[in-house]
Image (cartoon, rainbow, N blue to C red; front, side, top):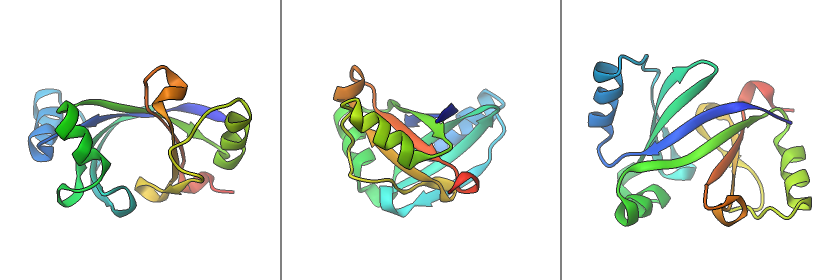
Length: 137
């Protein structure tokens, strides 16, 4: 079941500049960075309980975020909903006709399992579903 808005992701062309903006200009608490190799991204998280802001930047200039930045520049990339059972949520949403960008969840930041719903299924918005590692079944 979907339990919360996990995070709002913003694609950024300059990660260090964006981190500085959110820390110094907005005064948000910085949780650190993480390289998510399967997604070819480097992420930075700013927790704002019960949600977070995630900055996403291409890892070594590669992957889908690099393509997004080339096409659109920086901006809102996706919304992520937290799930307590990602497999059940994916099965339920597939039954309702939602299309996903992959066949099954893959590793995400902080040891989570993640999957993305195709924007065509959600009025042009990319939606991620994430199951935190501590909620894995």
